[in-house]
View (cartoon, rainbow, N blue to C red):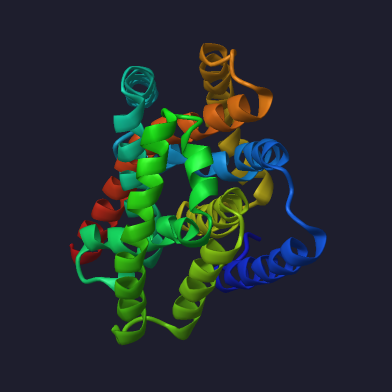
Length: 295
């Protein structure tokens, strides 16, 4: 049985508490070690959360024949390749676009905070910018893997000031909206606290892999009517394997980088280019679900 939303929230809160304690009593890991560990964890725990997009397409009726399934995979791959080419050609614009769609995507976990779906970008932006408040230099170091140092520092400064705008607004949404449960409010506050006080890479993997990915996978397990964990994992395998092969091609393009920078850069770019077709699929699924409920 997949974990329920409540149990995921408990695991997330517990893990954040443990990491708070470990961070202050065991000292900080070096950036290189963090980058490699985070890359591995994101590949193992985070990447598969989009590996059931073909099943989502099937549930909505978009993919109901082998031909349509082949076309779906072809379109998914073409969008991802186009995204990678854009990264190679326009790294700064690609990084900015990735941050923007990530804010929207992560914010969808707290979409009840706003009446309009688009404005879920506000809690998402709050989550993404929390590390800028106390770890601005660390964030700039991460960005410098993708863009030149001046642009990395500028983005870190912009994110720092943006955090002071979107964090208070999102907290206000969380506590004033009447239809938000206490569990969701507490989870959001724990997420913001983790973003503020944990090192950025550690926070990224904890939020993305434990909170965001597990929620999505749990939702799909029940929504798509999987009967056993075995069949669920089997369904994850094809797209996960293809993603790993794509990762190898990305890594070859940046093979001159150091091992830590190469691993982190390759994984982040892979996730970013897969996020584009993933978000299109998920948003269509939400639209289809709302339409089905109305009809």
